[in-house]
Length: 370
Ligand SMILES: [Mg+2]
Image (cartoon, rainbow, N blue to C red; front, side):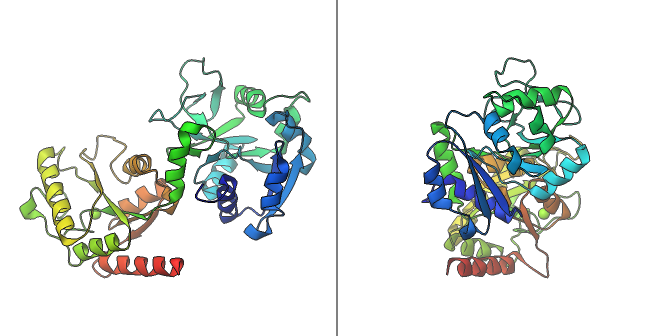
C-alpha cells in the first residue's frame, strides 16, 4: 500500500496508541516478514515472533504462543486497519469486567456480512460465522482485548480461535463488544483493495461547520433562510482559497433545523448551498460536499450534531480516517460530534477566525512536508 507493507501501517498505529511490544504469529513465508521488520526498533517497538506450521489455524497458533502472552493481551488479525482509540476501548473493557472484548463494526450501511448479534448491554449474545442465526447485526474486526485465561479454554486440536472460542464466551455473557460506525479497511479480499488504497492515501481533507465558521451565525433559533441572509465572515472565503491552493479538500457539515421547523424549505437550503459553492469556486476555492441535518431538535435523528452521524457518512463517502481528520466548528456541539466520531476538532471564534486557523494549519503542513 503506497510502497509500504500493510502490516507497517498497523504497527505504526499500535506504537502511536502506546503499545511497546508486539508478538507476530507467523506461518507462511515467515522470513519475508522477519527480514523486513526485524526486531522492530526502526518503528520504536519490540517485535517478537512465534513461528508455527503453515497449516495451523488461529486457535492452535495462539495456543502454541500461550507462554509468550501477557495476562492481558490485544489481538489483531492483521488484515484489517481500523483507526483504533485505545483509551476508549480500555475504559469500556474495564467497565464490562468481561474477560474478552471485541471491536464490532455496526454495519448499518451493509458494508459487509453480519456475523453476530448483541444484547442491550452490547455484549455479543450470538456469534455465527455461518451467518444462519436470525437477527444478526454487526461484524467483529478483532481489535480485541483478552485476558489470558480464555486461551486455556481452547482445545489442543487445530481449530479456529474465533469459531471455537467466541460462541462459548458469548453463551456465558463473557464477550463484550466495542461498537464502532467507523469503517475498517481490509486486505482480506481483492474487492476491498481499491478502497483500502484510497483510505491509506490519507489525502488532506478538512471538515468545516457552516454557520459561525464560514458565514455569520444567526441568533439562536433563527436561520439563514435565503441567499440574501447569507453573510460571509471576514476572511472565510480567503481561507477556502488558501486551503485549495495547499491541496486540502473541503467538506461542510451543518445543522439546519430551520427546514424541519418550517423557516425554510429544503430547496431554499439547497439554493443557498449552490450559491455558496459557486461564490467559493469563483473566488478560487472549492467545497466538495455539503452535509446537512434538516431535522428538528427532538426528532432523534443520528445526524444532528452533537451526534456524529454526518461525520460517519462522510467517512464512508470519502474513505476518511477520522482519527486523522480535523473538524473546525464554532460550537461545543461540533466538538462533541467530533469526539464521538474519534475526529480531531478545533473551534473558531471572533478572536480566532477560520483564516488564522487555516494559516497555522497550512504552515504546520509545510513543516511536516519539509
Ligand atoms: Mg456553527
